[in-house]
Amino acid sequence: MPNITNYSYLIQSMFGGKGISWGTGGTLPGVFQFSQLNSSSIQSQLKAAGIDTNSKQYKAVIQQMTKSGCTGGMYTNVQAIKNLMKQFNSDGDIVGPDGLAGLVVTGAGDSYKKIIDIPESSRDEIFEYVKNAYLGHNGMQTGNGTTETYMDMYKQLDKDDRLSGRYTLDQYRKAYSEAFVSAIRAVDPTWTHGNPVPSGVVDGITREAVEANLHQSGNRLSAGFDRKI
Image 1 (cartoon, one colour):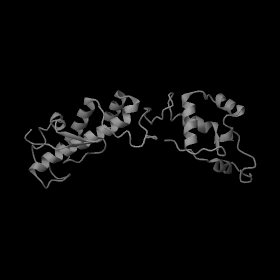
Image 2 (tube, rainbow, N blue to C red):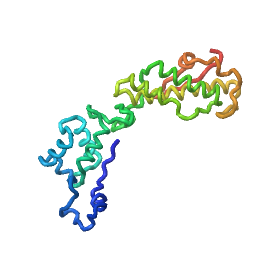
Image 3 (cartoon, one colour):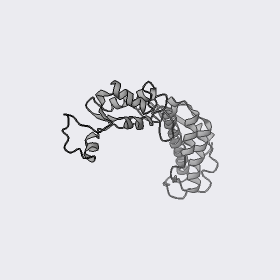
């Protein structure tokens, strides 16, 4: 979420404005108080800079600045507003560095933390990633290694479902890992991550078998695994 800070004192000091009497006049060219935003002169400056003041993108920026505490007496400038607009798309949605909307937690609290339907291909890729961690790295997952899987899933979901999709895939990932641990400890109760995995224990475990034993409690997924399945 963008942070709005009043840097006007710093800006003017950098340009030799130490003698300026704050609150009684004198600002750098292009710098104006937020309370002047809707004046005809400032609106003309914004439009001259290529900003569509009727766009959802612009209105979202101004709304966000207001929510972030930008009051009438604070200073801003046209370029600052223009830069902030890059953080929003044409629908007024906050976007991440990847340009996708719906992946920034705003005022929704934890309401996105719920289990939703996600593509089977995403679950399959995460399962294989987790399984390979137990087959080749004694249960130690190396780095993230799943960014592409998450990105592909986001593109298949509506923007309003992307946060919940990420949460859901995280839950599957934890449940898959829990299932492998359960199967390993059924053979070696003392096993911990980083120790050698008993030979052959996890080789035949499939995603379908694990998901058949998934349990959902509220917004959580958990799994045990019966080696006899």
